[in-house]
Image (cartoon, rainbow, N blue to C red; front, top):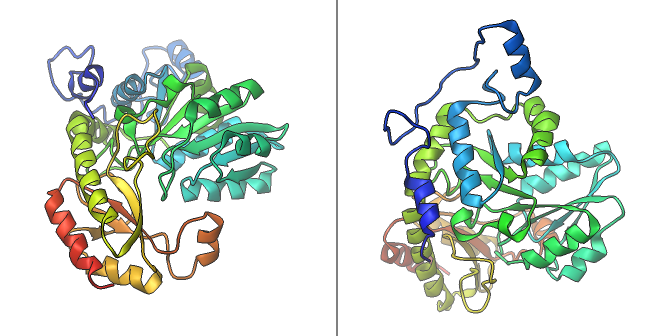
Length: 382
C-alpha cells in the first residue's frame, strides 16, 4: 500500500530543532544531568516527566524517538521502554488496582497473559475472549473491568477486530482500551485515530527492523502517560537507553520501504502456500475477504496450517528450511520460522484455539522466489 506523505517525512526527515544539519540525531550518552542550582534541580525532580534529571526518566535521544512514534500514530505523547514487556507491565501495574478486571480480546502475546495471571496474586483478575463479536466482549465485562487489551491482527491466527465497535463499547462503560499495534506498524494502522486510548509497540520488531535492539513504546494522551510514568515507568526501571533509541530512529528511516517490501513478499509467499496441497489453511489478513477496513496494509508476519499436521511433521518441515531461519521474534530483514506447537503443549494450544499444525513465518526482505522455493522443498518432506 502507498505510504502517507506525512509518515514518509516523519520517518526520513531531519530531526526538528537540529541546528547542525545532521541527518541523524546525536546520542546523549549520559546517566545524569546537572543543574546550576539546587533549587533548579528540585524543580526538575518535581516534574521529572518533563525535565532531564536522570536517564531512567528522560533523555534527549529517547525523546526524539518518542516524538517520531507519537507523530506516526497521530497520538498526543509517547513513552519508550527497554522492551515491549516493559511497556505492557507499565500499563497493567500503573493503571490497575486490587479488585480490578481486564479483558483480553483475540489471541494476544503470550507473556502478556502470563503477567496477567501473576497479577491474580495481587487481586487483579482477567478473562480472555476469543470470540471476536463485540457482544462476546460485552458479556465478559464486569463492574470492575478497567481495561480491554487486544491485538488486531491477533497473535498466531492474525484475525482482525472491529476496532471502532470495540472502542465504542468501552467508552460507553468508561473502560480504557489498549491495543498492540506492532504487527501493522503506524504506517498500516493508527489505532489512536479510531479512539484507542493506549497503543503499544514492540520496537524490537518492524520499527527497529534489524534484529539488533530490544525496546517498547506506549502512545497515549499526555495525562494518561504521566500517570503511567510516575506509578510504573520510573519505579520498574524499564527505560530505553539512548543508543538503543538511536538504533530505532535509524530503523525508522527505512521503515516505509521495508514495510512495502515485507507486504509484497508476504503476500507472494501466502498465495503460494494457499494453493499448496500440503497446506490446509493460510492465516493472512490480506487474503480473500479477511482484511478489515481499518487495516491499510499488511506486514510480512502470518501463519499456515499443515494438512494433517502433527508435531513430527511440523518439525520435519521446519528443519528442512534453509532460507527461513529458525528463531523467535520477527520483523527483521531476515526470514524466520517457528511453531507454537512444542510437542508437549496440546492443552495450551487448544485453550487458545490454535491448530496443532500451525507454522508461523516472518517473511523478510530476501527475494520472494527464493522464499517460495525454500518452502516448496521443505513441504515436499510431508
